[in-house]
Length: 124
Image (cartoon, rainbow, N blue to C red):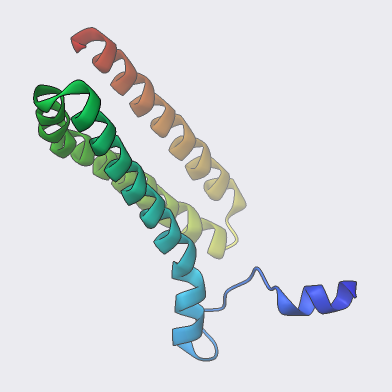
C-alpha cells in the first residue's frame, strides 16, 4: 500500500522531459489556488470594511492598494532575481556561491521588511 502511494504522488515536476502541458498545469496549480484565496480575502475584506466602517474607510483601502501592490511587486522582484542567481550557482555546482546568495537573499528580504515596518509605524 505504501508503494502505491509513492507511485501516485510525485513531488518532482519535470518541465524539461515529456509533455509540457501536464507538467505546467501541475506546477501552476498551487499558484492558481493561492491566487483564488488571495482574491477571496480581498473580497471579504472589502465587504466587511464597506458594511461596518463606511465609505471613507473603503476609499482609504482603495487608495492604498496601488502602493501596497508596488511594494509587494518590488519585494517579489528582488526575491525572484536573487533566486535566479542562487539557482544558477546551485546548478553549476558552486555551493559556496549558492549559500552566499541564499544568505544575501534572506538578509536583504529581512532588511526590506524591517525598513517597511519602521516606515509604516512612523507614518501611520
